[in-house]
Image (cartoon, rainbow over all chains, first blue to last red; front, side):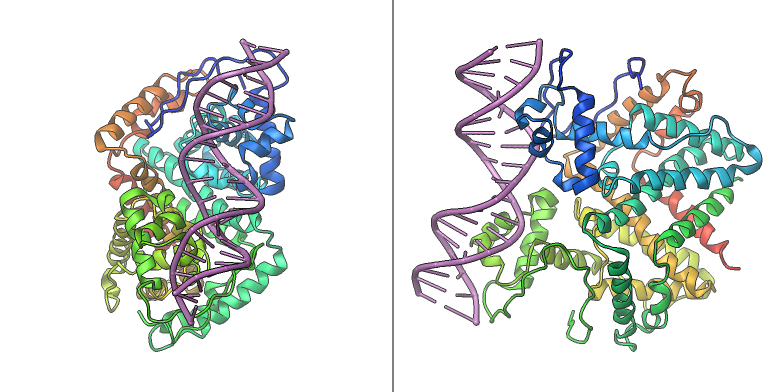
Length: 241
Length: 241
DNA sequence: ACCTGAACACCGTTCAAGT
DNA sequence: ACCTGAACACCGTTCAAGT
């Protein structure tokens, strides 16, 4: 968790540059404590409920007090996101015999970690992660893909593409998690979707009508996710030239 | 553009159900005019600037007046999104000889349409599109994939996966477009990213250091996008069993 | 050196009152 | 039948004043 040996993280210049912050002393209010409180709110009420005011309230103080420790809400979100990424356990070395299997499992674990925090995926999406844990994840992914004998540039692009896929899926799923959508409601919604596609004008949308049942299959989303994994890994394997 | 012959769209029950709205008479304020104003603001100032107050101001009225024509901001966003999707031109019939080429081109066009509207991708992501134009897009995609001889369930999953990819890429690119990030700034940022990866502790992240240059290649993003298209289409083709 | 209350400049949405 | 101003219950962030 020590990040003292990492170089300063590159930042895109934004319209309003983040304010410089003073180094805090040993106190009850710390970056760690703030991140913990923030993640707890995300877990219990969703990302939108994670306002500076709510986080401060949970710590028994006012919103303004947080700004002595985090530069902005954006800064706090980065903290929270890297903590979530850190939940994924990473195998210490790659197995050239089973790189495809291991790759898939790692991506499943990543999805599971994100899914454990409601709609946190929305926050992951918005940023290039340079944190400690994100670097560990990249290291693992490169290692695994190298075990598969893929060219360096293919590996590099894959390191972009694969987390993009996982995060995108998790993002969508997180939207339902943040509304209070139960599995029963989801099933009900799926039935209505199928009915909708089936009752669209068949002379204009014949293929949509024909595939109405297929388009709304895969209730839990696990099959959907697995399908994407399969397509991506097969596609990557085909790039080994 | 007539949507009178479509069945009512399925909706997930949300915590606060959208208010029922009265049917408006022929007036200066119409759903069309509101959507146009909204999209113009997105184009010129970005999605975050598209507030109900700003849209109303552009139409010379107050925010409250919009609620006679759109049920909520969510409702307005759906309108805007389907309009953007409608910009993609769709070929009338599939060519079995070149389904992979045609599929890729359609997805490129979709990316281009979205990229033409700043960070509108963020709004597309959040919803399952049931609009007129979204249906046309689905119809085209199914038609094209059927020309490739893929199984129905593979096609259905692909109709989910491919737009997910395009929208996810566009979403990321849109983040840079919404900040005022020029190509020069982006290039500068890329250099800093490369330096960052290169200067990370090599004993902990040897593979990240080794691939620093590759990880930050592909300046414009076009190559990245094309890579993903290639992986996905090859992977899909491999699912033809 | 940190923490705070109050304020600033915003949001989406509602509602009584107008025309 | 539509439109409106004012209000409600929120935001992220700043800043002078406290300890």
